[in-house]
Amino acid sequence: MKHRMVIGSILCLAVMASVAVFAAAGLSAPGPERSEPLGPEMAPDTGAGELLVGVEGGVYGTREEAEAANRQMSFGDVAGYYVVPVAQFQGFREGIGASGDFAQVSVFRTQEGALQFAEMARAFAYPATILPERVRSLGGLYAGLGQEANQNGSGPLTRPIPESLP
Image (tube, rainbow, N blue to C red):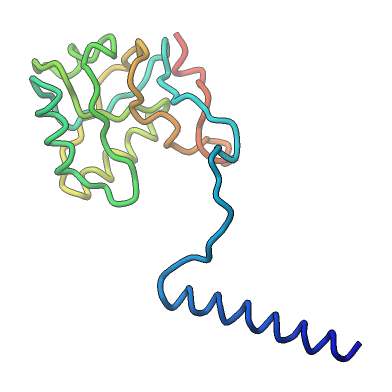
């Protein structure tokens, strides 16, 4: 019995030493390789048919121009703007008053989410224009839904709310 306790202690020390070596080297311990996601893969929420609050960071004549400008705007660990065709949102062109086919945009279901994002963008010294009217998502590319807090405090807002439904 005493022999097993000594062996157990030695194994425990060996594991702790390995973890310390990996941590000191800035590595993580190798784990099992996974070829499939841990949970169900979900389609990005585009808010198709919903009336959304848009925050615009710039409008450009080509996708390449919009993406080049977007690469210059780092928001750190947080997703910032998404490059989307202006035609993806009914009412967007009227809300910005500028011509162009592609925009840097992030959309929200709540005015509060849009205001918080715009404040963050301005803190980075990036442009952030909240569109004066909600725009109807026609689907298409992902543009940021799901990154705002649910008002009930349960985590991210992942479903339409009454204000976003027509």
